[in-house]
Amino acid sequence: MKKALGALAATLACIGGLTLLQWPRLRSQLTAGDLDPVQAQTEEILLRDRLRLLKVMPTLGFDNLIADWTFLNFFQYFGYSEARQLTGFGAAPEFFDVVITRDPYSRLPYQFLSSSVTLFAGQPETTVQLLEKGLMQVTPTLPPDAFWLWRYKALDELLFLGDIEATIQSLEKVAEWAIQSPLPDTEGYAANAQRTAAFLRQNPASREVRANSWVMIWNNAINEDVRQYAQLQIEALGYQVFRDANRLRIEDRSPEGESSSAS
Image (cartoon, rainbow, N blue to C red; front, side, top):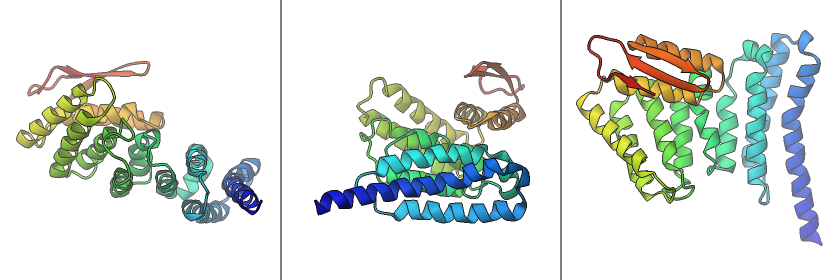
């Protein structure tokens, strides 16, 4: 009986914590017309305190619930443009820290790290640290698509940190983990990563690799602003961009083009 009551209390505590995370957003929606910088900054501070609590509070097995709810609340936080214009996106890394701490095995949140933490919060080093935190808890086979985390890490190391050697090492890890993955048809991912790593060793300033990396940023974009930014970066590298719904195709139009097209 005591165990049951304890579990119930823990569940209620989790739900209460999640409700507290949601409440500032709901309250701000009701008073958006009266939102001022002081109010926005105060709510940002309270939000970050709640996120720190969610990362350490006991859950008695409800970690996935906390991770999923926090991830959903991140999208509400990100989409609340009025408040973000006043406070920026400084809490974005803390949302992902909670999610990765509670459930490091879901790939979906990792896809949005570069879009949100790197581009909007301006913290590519934190993106890499969060990816490393997740990589310390997963294995090449659990989850089966864990090799993608190394690919996301390589993106930030190449495009935002300019660390070619770290990029090559991450790409080699993509190949190593993809080969061990129980998923079908991962040999192609491994071969592509190996080719890209070898190409970067010979051509560390490769426009082709950077353009294709920006295509991946475009594919994982959290909103249209990120897509537009990625497209501008691709065009600045000398490529022409063709958009068709959710598909992006690029063609190298520069005289010294390394390749004719990619997608």
